[in-house]
Length: 257
Ligand SMILES: Nc1ccn([C@@H]2O[C@H](COP(=O)(O)OP(=O)(O)OP(=O)(O)O)[C@@H](O)[C@H]2O)c(=O)n1
Ligand SMILES: C[C@](O)(CO)[C@H](O)COP(=O)(O)O
Image (cartoon, rainbow, N blue to C red; front, side, top):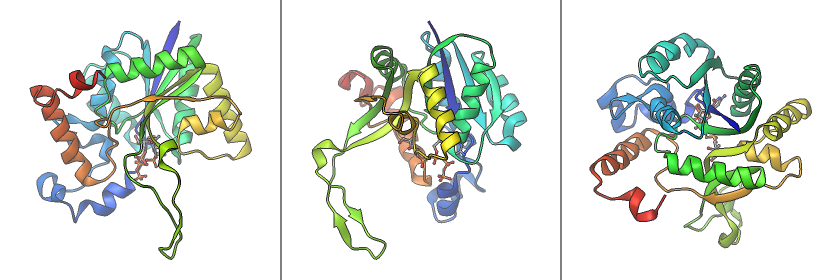
């Protein structure tokens, strides 16, 4: 049962760049670098997630997707420097996240391996753990498509462009969705190819599977599995990593995930 992983890190980091100059990070780290390559705990952000897949026996190979201009840099400074042997390929991403995922899936397919499952992960979620990867993969093996998520803790409102509230959805059914997401390989490839052919957009991979009318299951993620989106997220990630390494908060052990 062969399982591949696609780690997407081909974004532009627009929100990070827009807020950089006005953030405490500008003073510490100087000029902005694409956020997936920013240093976090002494390593580029993307290396943290890749290292989790490297150590996870349930994953056989990884494709890393980066901006076209950074392919050679990523091979040298990420894959070779950190001895990430499971990374079979570094490929250039596309304009949207889903274009980058599709290029990663094509690269896996072109390996000529009969992939049964695939795990897709945002390279800018450095606090993913092997436990989370295994949890979502187990659910995909049962049901075909699964994602991590967290029940929303606060009230959510839909706001009109003029700032007026138009709707307050019932919170009990709202979840925040994380990656990794896991799928039967052929199901996800078909979902992406159909979306490309029909010009369908989705913020995550599950949306494209949902658009085919296929069921997607959600399993409990972890609040520490944050997406580094804006400058302050780096400080949060650094702090969470420190707790984890010190065992101070016992995040993994206490919550059993
Ligand atoms: N064309 C794209 C866009 C996004 N991503 C990846 O998808 C993940 C989630 O995207 P996001 O946090 O939105 O990253 P960016 O697109 O870089 O950020 P922004 O939206 O602020 O520009 C990231 O790992 C990002 O690198 C990608 O591989 N290819
Ligand atoms: C895939 C994702 O991380 C799930 O929460 C999210 O949809 C990515 O969105 P972004 O706009 O590309 O950050």
